[in-house]
Length: 334
Image 1 (cartoon, rainbow, N blue to C red):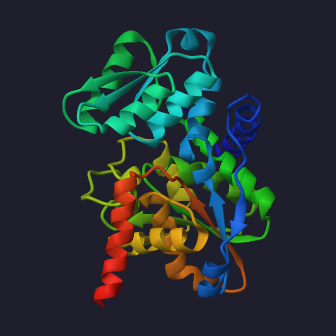
Image 2: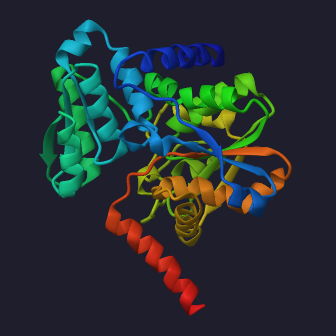
Image 3: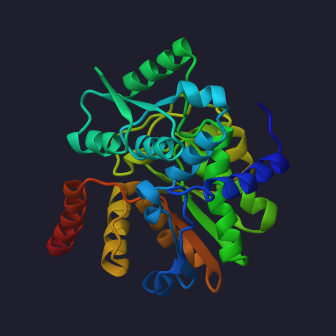
């Protein structure tokens, strides 16, 4: 499917009306200033609170829009996907709201807590021996064989339009934004948000943010083609993983991203700690990526308004405590 900028913006506008019209659907999230970060950067530092979205992340927007755009035939057959995290939970919740049967494929190594979170929302789960990649391959094969809709985490225009509703909210909440910082994984979030904002606020800088350890889309954009870029372990596991060959997000990212910012694992951990200490929010590593990048370069926008998309809060309690303790330990030993 080919879609131009105008049509994608129209789809985002339609998605915004659609996903907020149903009980249990998407909620508008706040855009609030973080005063301590404003002082540090000299910019008006605004946090877009997608961690307060249903299921704890922005993923609810794309999954909800996908479910609500299904045909009657597709709804009757149900949907499937593969994800142990935000996308899996969002798809399960969207299916419950839309009264559609959902099957989520998970690796057999999935944590009991994540498994429980998904099943609690009413989705059927199937455990697959191996890794997340194995479960995704199995889910896609099953969807093709059974003629069931596979809900991609990012490589789907309905999903991108749903994520783009964040851009619509941002433009209304702060029409004089100078820059928006967004963590990038597969590119669905920044494709949707960037496309809408560029249509309404053409002078805004769309800043793609990556963990240095997981920057596949960044490297592909630099090279001008999709390839299997190197990645390793990162706190930003929600945005880790390669870029699908032929994904619709790649050319959109090429058009809408104005700046690239990479941050280290230490910077991500410190940003997560700073948000907890100053704003009293638990945020996941991918959200920490965007905050870290904005704290690092926010002085480029002194006297102006910048927004950071806090994309989610779904991090294990023990992992979050480890992050806080590691940062505090480093300070004590300094």
